[in-house]
Every structure is written in structure tokens, then in C-alpha cells.
Image 1 (cartoon, rainbow, N blue to C red):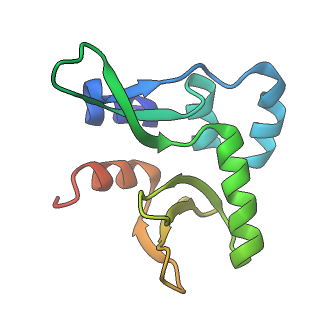
Image 2: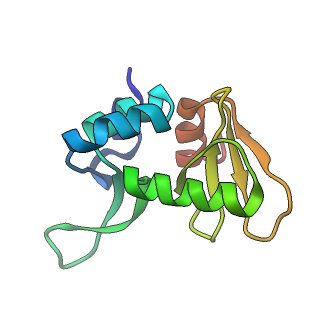
Length: 136
């Protein structure tokens, strides 16, 4: 199962895939981000979390499950400049913190007020399961 399929299984109707990265971004993305994220962006350049509201027929977007490529680049640049960190920022945590995919494939969280990063998951797949089912 791919990470994109896992996200779709976990979120069901509460996720919205976007158009894939365009051809002009392929080389830049391929050289900038790890293979797992690259494969996701080839399918969907960012994935939105959505929510159904009463009295509306369509879902509204409430946040990102994975940032689009340009936001990944921007947030990673900021992270590296501000914290001299290593890794790729792929999504925020909703409270001014963010998640970082490290070169070894582990996912760390950097909270807004904390000085240190904390291990959150041993892989992207574990991250999505844990984020979606925090008490499991």
C-alpha cells in the first residue's frame, strides 16, 4: 500500500487530493525531497483535510495533510535558516509547530515553544496512523 493509499484509507471522504506536481517541478522535487514524498506529490501536489458542515453539500478544506511542493520548499528553507535543522518540513501541526521528515525516514515534531525536536514516528506510514488515531 502506498502512503497516498494509506492516507485515503485513514481519512476517507475527509481528504482531497490535488493535481499532481507539474512537469516543470519534477526535477526540482526529485532532487529536493525524499522518494516517499516525491511519490506522493507525483499523485497529488499536497493533500487537504476536509470536513462536512451541516446544511452544505460539499466539504470545506480545513487544513493540510501534506503541504504542496512549493510550501514544503518554503517551510523547509525557513526551518533550516531558523533552526539549522536537517530534514524536510512536510506539514504543520496546527499550532505553529511542524513535522520534519529526517534523512533516515523518521518523523520528528518541532513544537512552537520547544527548543528541541521530538521523535514522533519511525516512518511516514506510522506518522499518518498515529496522527489520525492518536490514542492507538
